[in-house]
Length: 276
Image (cartoon, rainbow, N blue to C red):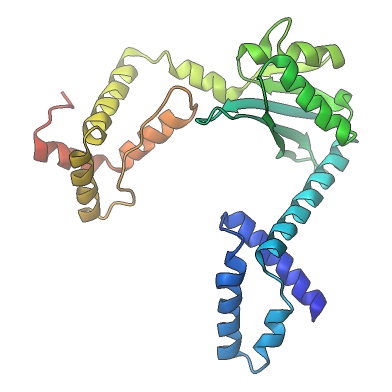
């Protein structure tokens, strides 16, 4: 009973981690729900079954940490014996916190290309190429992964990444001279989108104008939300895009397309000639 309860605890902790819910949901909701199901449908002692499944806040946290550690160790063990490529990305958030993200891509045992998130690390002081390289190098040394196993590296075009003398790639090439470097495909698409044709650029400006007209005033936002509710739309708000976030422009256009009929209705009600 205890072994099965422990296994159930790990599986439920995994579900909690995937859902992004607070760890306290295990004791506050999941266990009471299981108890009600057992009392209603199973002729056995529900208290005994519930007591064998530890789902306290600390238990769920420790289960998630253990599973994450096991996944990381399994991935690192595989990377020690195979060639792989890495994707490096450094982002600074609104609170000035710099975060380094590293992804790996490799061919698994089934000869299928697989991509996995390797690690993330906060950059305490600066985001220079040397700092980024030292952070990556320390992680690989800690997990005993040879840098020589890296055959390709993808980055964006930031000077800290591609600088000839002090960029991350410059330091990486000193350790792995034959490494193949490439500009991130998604970032290249973002750069290409900055130079749209005249027709596409005009269409995008119309979309931006329409979104700004609706979102710039709280009254307009409330009226538009009411229209979306009446039309039974899946969404009730439009999205803004920013040049700093690569994929935000596409998300903005997709949301605009999905709410197009409600936007037209809003414009007709307020006689706003933004589609001329």
